[in-house]
Image (cartoon, rainbow, N blue to C red; front, side, top):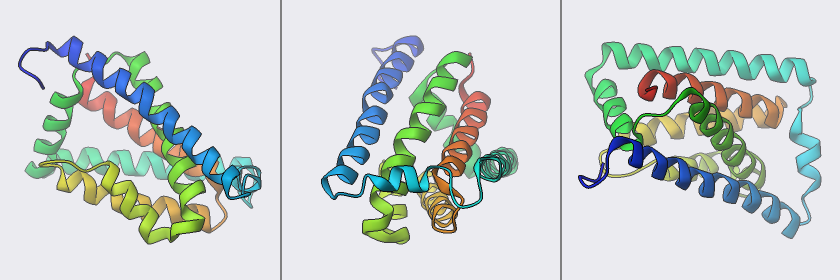
Length: 185
């Protein structure tokens, strides 16, 4: 956190930055699909091959399991505890409404871009690597590593017919529960 900024100002800046980045990812993904004449993928992969209930259930289950795993890792491994403390300091305190909005915006923007627009061009490994790159920074190697693994998992879910809905729900659940645990003021 910048020494000249208080926690509320820092969280407003993070929230404003997210309010710019995630809609740009969403728009960029849609434009990239349109440019490549692949916009039909949005409708084709939105729900997946198994229907909305399976997609929702799979996403909620994966999201809940991952959030519980993250909480356990943070509780029992110092490196994850330190990582979450660092992320919490970077983000600043958020209220529950801000956490909901941030979780939904990031899930929708990132999943449309990485698991829909990029996956069919770059493949699962490169789309996961670029997803990890977005989540990297100085001292955040563990965060980027986890993002890479989640990128592979989410890519596999889409490639195996669970659809964009499943990974967007999983991503939103992970983000909401993790942010709530880390930064709720």
